[in-house]
Length: 145
Image 1 (cartoon, rainbow, N blue to C red):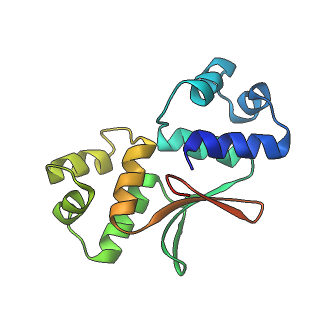
Image 2: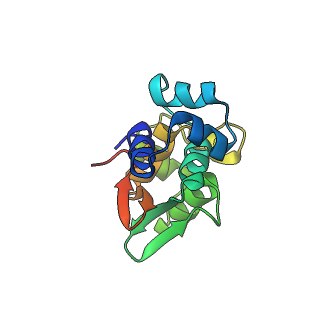
């Protein structure tokens, strides 16, 4: 599912309007409208904030027994942790994710560049992992089915 689809589904389940999501998340109503109607890629931190304010939990998962709860980490540290757990270098990750150079990955993970959801999905999927939203016992895979 896309970030938009997950957020819309969660809003629908709660009977929330865009205005309610704006109030609960601290974002302006115009920003919420832009996220839901125009933008194709969210900053992963924005997505995390939106799903968290609705009670969802964001996790990065390499396998069923290897889960990183995003309450404890940032997306960048979670991806770094996943990479290290696999024993990969930045070059290994860049090659697997289809980046021309490992410096692109280093820039994304250093904090110098804000990470969009599509970049996070690309990196996590390259490691055969998933970005998952858990909400009321249901799982939504970001960028998946």
